[in-house]
Amino acid sequence: MAVSRTTRVNLLISNGHFLSHFYVLTIVLINHGHPELVLVLVAAILLASLLCVGSAKASARAAPMVVFAAE
Image 1 (spheres, one colour):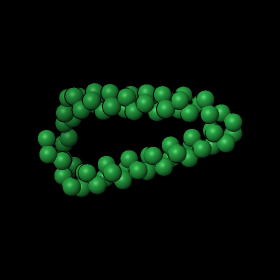
Image 2 (cartoon, one colour):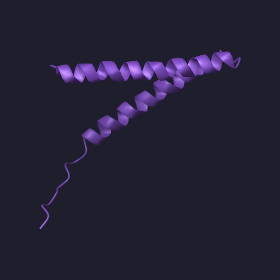
Image 3 (tube, one colour):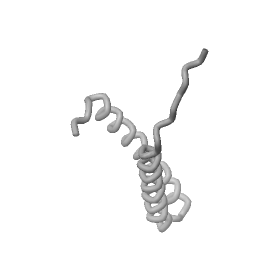
Image 4 (cartoon, helix red, strand yellow):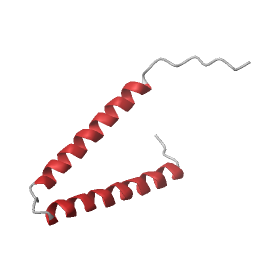
């Protein structure tokens, strides 16, 4: 499957944006004396991403919606 240049750029930007938020969250946890919670944060983010992928796949398989033109 070929991915367009725009899609690749958007994926790169969104991944960088996500990592910047993750970095800030881990620094806050470590600075507040809870480095053990970093692994919990990683697990929660992984679980959330798996749930989002699952719901996206399920919604993609839904029957197409019939839309009528306005009069």
